[in-house]
Amino acid sequence: MSKILEVTNLGKTYQTGNHTLTVLNDVSFSVEQGSTLAIVGSSGSGKTTLLGLCAGLDRASTGSVKLNGIALDTLSEDDRAAIRNQYVGFIFQNFQLLPTLTALENVMVPLELRGEKNTHKIAMELLEKVGLAERHDHYPTQLSGGEQQRVCIARAFSNSPQILFADEPTGNLDNETSEKIQNLLFELNKEAGTTLVLVTHDLELAKKTQRLIRLKGGAVLSDERTTH
Ligand SMILES: Nc1ncnc2c1ncn2[C@@H]1O[C@H](COP(=O)(O)OP(=O)(O)OP(=O)(O)O)[C@@H](O)[C@H]1O
Ligand SMILES: [Mg+2]
Image (cartoon, rainbow, N blue to C red; front, side, top):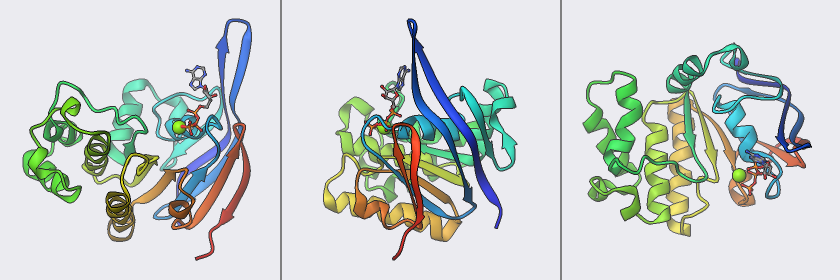
């Protein structure tokens, strides 16, 4: 099996005044193409920061991230954006939908960036999958938190990513919708072979993945295969 993601001695610090805050410290792990992984840890342990670095949304202070063998730290901002569009889907903890675009247009953005032809049709199908087809022409402010989260999920699926990073993908959903979304995530993994890396506070969801990494204070506390 090939490695889609290789994280080596990754560190992230923030400088505030004369104080250095270490958010991630010497994190190393690699992820096989097609596998599923959950990252858990208490609030502030560095989960979102780690996901952002893995996806090339942010730059590390030390260490390296390789996505599909490509070292992200050697790339320009534009090149990293191109790599993201080619390989990566990202479901943000805070959604990050574009406020001036409708639900449908938000889902169409990655498709248009890829030069896809049937952007409208594909985006509608994705909105249907997350149960929001009839809300396609609504703007993010007209949608509830859970609905925005589902638009975000449809957008993350739209470029058929090889690896999907999901930051609390079911954090704002009721049980029934959460189950539907979980099924979609695992179906995508099974049917399209999409590697799934998710961050969650929901241990039941975490246990459905093949592997569990626990973060504490920005470092890896444990890294284990999940027993099903
Ligand atoms: N731009 C920044 N400047 C300074 N500190 C930051 C910055 N971004 C994140 N942090 C700090 O980094 C730490 C880790 O944040 P992160 O968002 O990765 O945590 P998390 O594990 O995702 O938490 P949660 O479960 O609450 O989402 C926090 O203490 C946060 O305050
Ligand atoms: Mg977070």
